[in-house]
Image 1: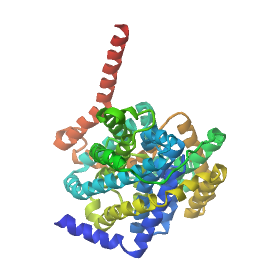
Image 2 (image 1 turned 180 degrees about the vertical axis):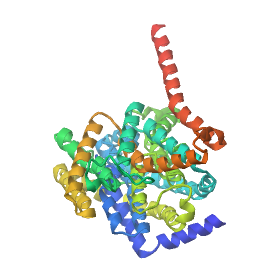
Image 3 (image 1 turned 45 degrees about the vertical axis):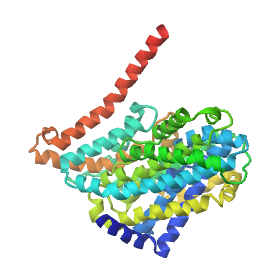
Image 4 (image 1 turned 30 degrees about the vertical axis):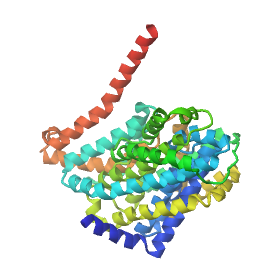
Length: 504
C-alpha cells in the first residue's frame, strides 16, 4: 500500500502542467533523435546536460527520461525504412523490419514496433514500481565495504559487457578513473594531476566529458569517416495491422517482454543479448508459412519480439541505476551524470533522500508511454520527414548547440578547448572500438568508490581483510570474479568444440 500511495504522489507531481510539458517535449525530442540515424539518446542527453544548471531537478529528469525511452520508439523507424539502426538495440529490428518494408509492409512493421514498445514499456514500468523499492530497502543496509564492492561490480559489468573487447572496456574504465582523480583530493585537500591549471582544481565537469565523448565526437566522426554515405529509403504505407498480424504479434510482445525485463534488472548491461534471444525464440517457434517469411519477405514476429525485449530491457534498467547507482548502457551512464549534476547520487539512499523525485520519475514513465504511443502511431509520417534533413546542417547544428551549452556553464574558453580535446579523444575511441560509457562511469563513480574504500579500510583498522570477512561483500567479490572469468571459460570451451568439429 505504501508503494501505491507513493506512486499516486508521484503522479500528482508528474501530472502538473509544467512537468507534463517537459515529458511531452522529451518524448517528442527522443522520438526525433531515434528517427535520425546515428544520433542516439546518449548523444541527445549529453548535448542537453547543460540545461541542468537552469531547470528544476524533477522537470529535468522527467525530460531526460522522455528522451531516453522516446529514442527507443523512434529508433525502429530508421531501422525499418533505411536499414540503418541508430542504436545497437535496433539492429535486430532491421533484420526483418527492412525486409517487410521492401515487400510493401512497412506500415505493419512500424505499427507492431510502436504497440509492442508500449506494451513492453508499460509492463516493465510496473516491475520497476513494484521491485525497485525493495531492492533499495535491502541495499540501504549495506556498509562501506559493500558499497565499494558494488561500485567495483559496476566497473566490471559496464567494462566487460559494453563494447566488443573486455580489454578495451577496462582501458576506457581506467581512463575515466584517471579523469575522476583530477582536482582536489576530497579527504586531504591536496591538488592532484592539475598540471598547475587553476581551472582543474575543481575537477573536470561531467557535462564536458559527456558532451565531448558523445555529441562532439559523433559530429567529428561523421565529418571524418561517414560524410559521403547515402541512405536509400523504402516507401511507407498506411500504419495499420491486419487481424493475422495482431494474432502473430501479441504472443511475440509478451515473450519479448518476459525475456527483456530480467536483463534490464540485472547489472549486466546491454540490449543486444535479449533482442537477439527474442529473435531466435520467435524464429524457432514460427511454423509453416510464418517461418518461411524469416529472412525472405520479413516476419512480423521478428520485429514485434525484439522491439518488446528492447523496450522492456531499457525500462527495467532503471532499477540498477536508481537503487544501486549502476548504469548498464551509454544513456544510463549519462543520466547518472545528470543526477550528479544536481548533487544527487543514485543508490540505496535515493528512495529515502529524494523519494518525491524518484516516484515522479517512475510516474512519468507511465505517462510517457501513453504519449509515445499517440506520437508514434498517428504521426509517424511526420517523423519520417525528419529523414530529409541534410546531415551536414544537422550535425553542424548539434556542434553549435553542444559548444554553446558547454561554454554557458562557466563562460570559460578553457572549457571549450577541453571540450574539443575530449571530442577528439572520443573519435579515436570510436575509431578503434573503445566503448565510451566506462569512461563516464569511471569518472562519476571513481571518487565515490575511493571514499568508500578508505572508509572500509578504516573500519577494518587498516586491514583489507574487511572485504572478505563480511558475507555480502564476499558475495559481491565472487560475482565480480564470475563476471570476469565465466565468459572467458565459456568462450574457450566453445572455441575448443569448434576446433574439434573442424578437425573431425
